[in-house]
Length: 189
Image (cartoon, rainbow, N blue to C red):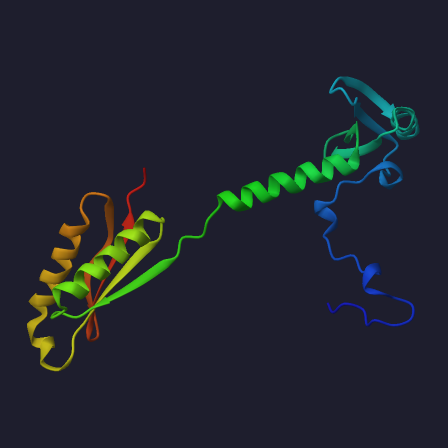
């Protein structure tokens, strides 16, 4: 469903982009006749009519916020809605910070990779693994190198040995066309 066209009647501010499931109803938005009320101090007040609960919240200068709409009767709490929204946003941001996407970094080798290049690539692989990313090791064969696949297997074994005990081999070296591929992940601590 497309958003309504911007005309004289509607403006972007009129469009409700957020989903209603994620919004907590407050004050007059609460439509049920009876609600279970929790006071601003966290004490259970009991089951009241919506109007009584609204009056109670108004006396304290706070909002009546529906926190469990699916309960019978719905649970509402007397609180400052602005502060509540801020706390919810803060929790969501914290959760987002903690959840980090694991990336797959690819490091390419050849069976005849020189020692200096090998050490640089190995150092990069260690850095990727320390950051929590997975590493895809790609050993590429050219021309007649395909007839010497044991060099690729030796290279993969050397990489595995040089990285030490802090890794988990997710997939052993396997041939895919003209390249040998191996997946390495950091060991969980």
